[in-house]
Length: 389
Image 1 (cartoon, rainbow, N blue to C red):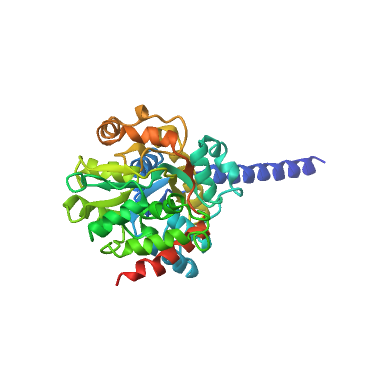
Image 2: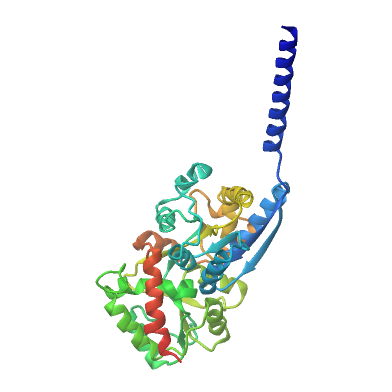
């Protein structure tokens, strides 16, 4: 009997020891991971510092974060090729609605909601109505990190334009009278370009602002006419602002952030002005954090922590930055007074008082859904952009 008891106790001690080892292994921190971030929206201007703060505050989780910028249209194909090859070189993508849309269409992104909803408990309730509607556009495949009630607006040199257009018809007439002095970038790679594209159906009274194939007859007809006096379509908004600032162009389309930030940086003279179209509808914009499929479980757990960190009010306040994506924060109750002092000074100096009034007074719309946006880009590329050889 004593021998049986002794054997039983021995087995219990062995089992307890094994359980202790297993628990220790489960709770021990894995080695820090390196994270590769690719930005195709210019979002790093708003979020890189906060991501670096996360790295510095969590050395047990993150070793190094590599930041890379890339053109939005090229990224989906690159990620698709990597995934087909069984590779995962990109861990996190910062994107606007353009690459978000293309990635959803090609099934590139990890779907966060509802599968991992418990990991992000409470985050989706932090959005106000406008950002919440933009988050819905992600269809669960990303997390909205910054928000901008975008436009469209016209931005112009007041020394060259004394009576800025207030309607699309007036813009066309001005452009025809001043050929090569109006320019905008390819919508598939430009926030102002696609905001202009999606804002025109409201301005022109098209049949269905959410159906670019069958409901935008007036818009496509207008853009083809406008094409005759546009010199070419740059591949990004930065090139447009450079030409505007240097004086080779007198007018372009813009959005709040692309109005404020280039003037704050000195790319565009501070005295350049904006003009709202009569009876326009805001087409809102947002940036998202998305994780490509194929990222390892180890990295995914760290990325989830990073995404949650980026949604904290302190990190959100940093997205006011230099007005690039004005206002910036995606969650409610993050006033400008919570932003870094430098951001407050820039917004106070280069922001425009009329924005607050227009945001409150004019109606707001979400952009096209991902699949439809891709269709609109393709139609613009083939029926408008392709006219310039």
